[in-house]
Image 1 (cartoon, rainbow, N blue to C red):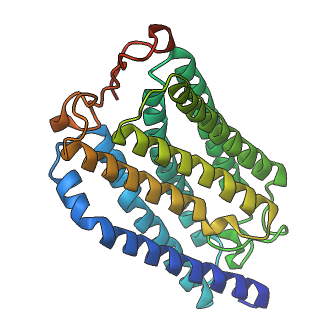
Image 2 (image 1 turned 90 degrees about the vertical axis):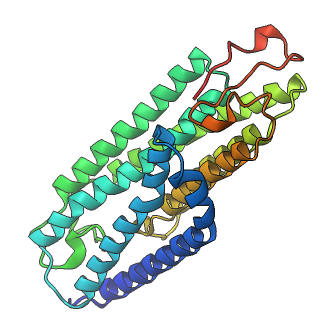
Image 3 (image 1 turned 90 degrees about the horizontal axis):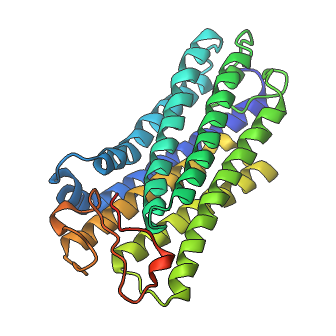
Length: 297
């Protein structure tokens, strides 16, 4: 590898990947006892699958990218071997993000009392962001110049304009669609919370934890996307992906823990079937016109 700037950028990327793995391990060690008690001993459900994806897929993705960066720093040639790793890395990353967002979409939909308008809004926003990411990822895979004998044809490298044939507009579309989707979902959650405040409805600990987690999740996604788009921070660092999975896993553990502790059982339908059969019961003090029938997630 002859370009000193590329070597320096790859080193920085490798250091960041090591930092991400360190954060993941620390987070995992700190919550492992709760994971064993609340997740592994429970029955299989959609939320358990989402948790396991959010928990363990980032390790695979980060380790592969780190190993590839080290392989490139050793002076190994790029080319076709780079492109072979590019495709699975891109799709693993997209799959991880979609799984984390799917969890918060379901919970936010439940917070909004399963209104049809909210469901249509969620489906439209989620479909738009998923389609945009798939299209951008596919185009990125197609338009990377694999004939360049350098690490710049790989996802882990910081690629120069001469090596990447894909127009910058695709990155802008990806950024805009992501921020728009997160903003729409965030506004729906804030509107639901405003209605609860307006009619003086007290949130149970479980609903409060979901609300706080979803709020932090979407604010972090928007903030990190803006920072990555407007500054020199490389999107290859994937700090937003790290935050998404840590927050999603934390919230699932917290709400499972609240259910197991049998808090506010008048609002939780069945404590033995936590979160997969979570019920949102209409409080007696709430006007009937403000909510729909109770539902479950």
